[in-house]
Length: 296
Ligand code: SF4
Image (tube, rainbow, N blue to C red; front, side):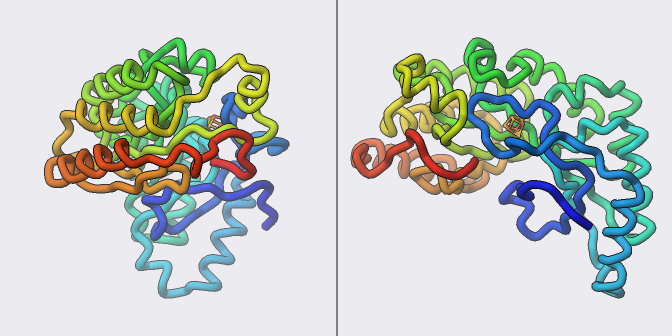
């Protein structure tokens, strides 16, 4: 099987079995992202998925029965219709008979394209823990970043997921609003997350990768990036505003200058203390977020 492009999966799925079902991203035009440049979106045909599963079966044999959690690979495989997803889940179960949970990345517009009945059927089939690029709670910022959906739309769709019983894990980025707007952004993002009640929150920090529109805008002076101190102040304000005791907060991304994680009820204060210390001691010169080489 030939798979085009890099495989990305959420860090919290490091121990989950990966099965490719799509390549690329249906949107592929967020201004900060270079993950799928030159990789057109493609749904892998049924036959290709089956070929992959045959290799898995031949390679792992009895171990296949122990696989309970599966991560469906691609930037937004939830873009597939409910019918296509359910067919692929049924196929996977023929090879991995005890697979019970199917997790993947999803965009807000992928959810919008499904009916409430579709969501219930997907939940019953084992779909859970959808990783959603929420990014932040400010509509104008999402519009500038060309996210393709607003915070209001994300709120509406995540509440539909909650009603169907599908948990979501929200990815948020520090620094999206640029210099001077971090605290405003933090408050809007915390209020949004409190309303939509994610199972997990994953944080990374916006960086200007080469050949992105964001990098270009920074070079031309159209976008003024936040300082690292501002990013950390935004993170502290966001974390302080969260009222989600059972939520797991993850900020261990290589782009996060302060590494934190924990269940909010137990470790929120400890994480806030670590941020407070870091805000006092941050070394701006040691962190250069412009024109980085690499990807998210
Ligand atoms: S950030 Fe996600 S949705 Fe946006 S272009 Fe990149 S992969 Fe696609």
